[in-house]
Length: 172
Image 1 (cartoon, rainbow, N blue to C red):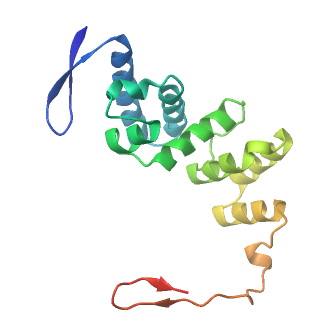
Image 2 (tube, rainbow, N blue to C red; image 1 turned 180 degrees about the vertical axis):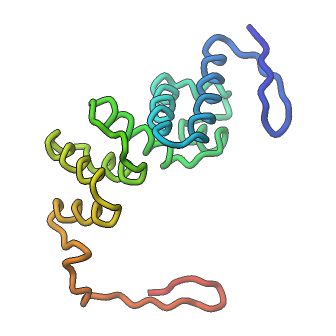
């Protein structure tokens, strides 16, 4: 066993085995990558996937019962954001799709749509994601799904909402 000093709100020392040292190294790398931006979220997705697949999150102790609890309580991240990074990595990067130059928000949308799509359709959507602004990209997806696009809609089927001045809640 080796003692490693972890830096957090208060300094603590934890006895870690080989797997624990690997988890600490991965967590440190994730924190760096997510701070850098760019395509680093894909690499962060790969690392999150490694922690999830190998159940390394269990090394944080018996008080952590699930990967979700580990993400939210130990790492201070939003679970859906981490899962979106994993989806982008697993569904797009590992399948060999060219995703450089595509904004994270578009990749997130594509990753959530592509589970049962044929490869040709995914390639087409990725090309549209590179070429068009976000709103046009969303309209293309709506068109592919057989829905009315926002620029082809007459906007006659409206919903009206009221807002409470006291609490700020929107009411239908």
